[in-house]
Image 1 (cartoon, rainbow, N blue to C red):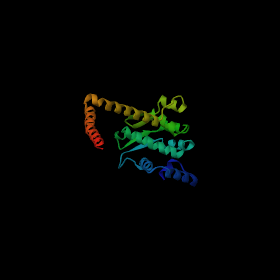
Image 2 (cartoon, rainbow, N blue to C red):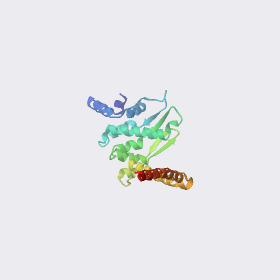
Image 3 (cartoon, rainbow, N blue to C red):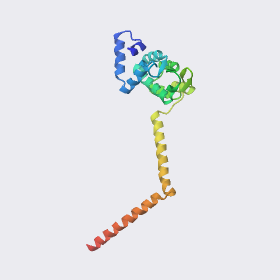
Image 4 (tube, one colour):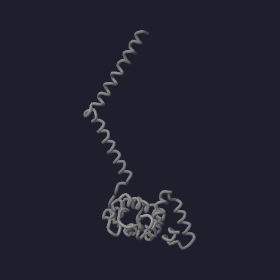
Amino acid sequence: ARLACLTRCVDQQRAMKVQDDWLQLTQKERDVLLDVFLLDGHEQKTFVFVYLPLFLANSIANHDVNLLGGLKFLVEIYDRLLQHRCLSLAGPSVMVDLSSVALVMKDVEDIPTLRKCFDFAKLVKHENGVTILLTTNSYQVLSGQLVHHTRSVDMLEQLTAQQTKLESAIRSLPLRHGRLSSLFSSESEIQEPVESVRVRESLCL
């Protein structure tokens, strides 16, 4: 009912579409959104998203995003707020100004582009809550002037760097401690008696 009100459902057809989009979310996404829609800060501290109806309305108006994409991205915003410990601000609830994000939802090309745009956004904490500010780089991503690497590429580069660092550390171990050298020498000592046994066996035959 709360989501139906936020999306301004006025007929059964739109209500059914909202229900279909809701069922396509994962259970984790639905749990997060239930907190967003139902918690009021009296019994449990929560975020209050300002301009949320506009955010959802513009998501629906954008056929490349739709309500489903808007809801999924709202969960990502929620997770980012938690990562930056925005819920630790004073008060029973934390106001989150979504106005800048809500305005671009109507014309953004797709959700991946929106994610890249959000990567450059800043979360500005103040006494009244948190404001999500899109930077110049954010708008350049939206206009296509700035091409930003995808997260998967960034993660791959980080993993490669970590692997290279680990390999370098392993190679430096014999020089520092001589453990690998002693290990190799002990292995050769073990192998020598085995070879001599094989030679004696061949001579007996």
